[in-house]
Structure formats: C-alpha cells, structure tokens
Image 1 (cartoon, rainbow, N blue to C red):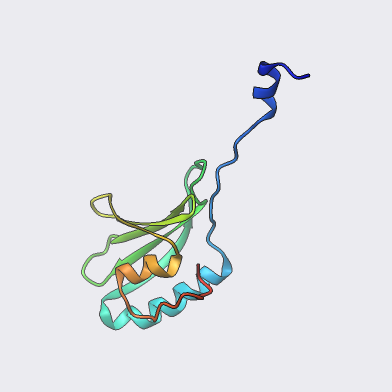
Image 2 (cartoon, rainbow, N blue to C red):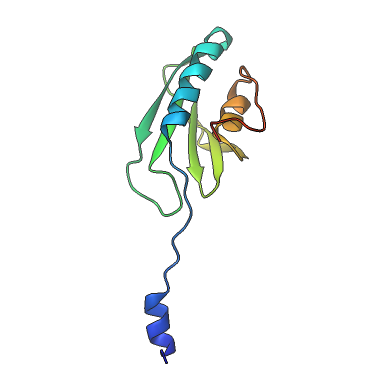
Length: 118
C-alpha cells in the first residue's frame, strides 16, 4: 500500500490547453480576407514568450487600420479562447471557439455550430 507522501509524488495534474492548429490558421486567413473592408489590416500567429500551464503556446495578434500597434490578442486558456485589447491589456471576452473569438472582433464570417475552427 502506498503512503500518502508517495501518492502525492505519483499523482500529477496536467492542465488542459488548446493549441493553434492548421484549421485555425486557415480560418484566420479567410477571416482576414473577409474583414479587411471593415478595418482589419493584418493578423499573425506568434509563439508565446514563456510557456504557462493551461495557456496555449501561441497567440494571434490582430492589427487594425487606425493604429500601427496590434489592437487585439487572441489565445487559449484551458478550453476557452480569450480576446484581449492589446493596447490597454484588458480582457474583452472568453469564447468557446476560435471562430467565436474572431467574430467578436469583426463578425464577417457566418458562425455555425459545426464549424471546423473550434
């Protein structure tokens, strides 16, 4: 029988985290093309500077026409996608899918329940 101190060493909790996948990149490309007439200038995916448990190893920065600094940052934390105001560092919302997060910034693509970019 294992002692409590031995049990604590064996049992490790690994936090769930979503990553930016190829399907997210494809959806981002379509979203950028559709949202350019609405003021989105560009977006790109960057690796995270330091790895945090439960947070994706990459994030998306979105630029708008009005400023040279990135306006939005999108990343995952656990099973949610977070949208932040990149200028003021404020959380704007948490979403169940990558598509929903981008839709909050500019609703230019139809969002369906069975969308691939979840």
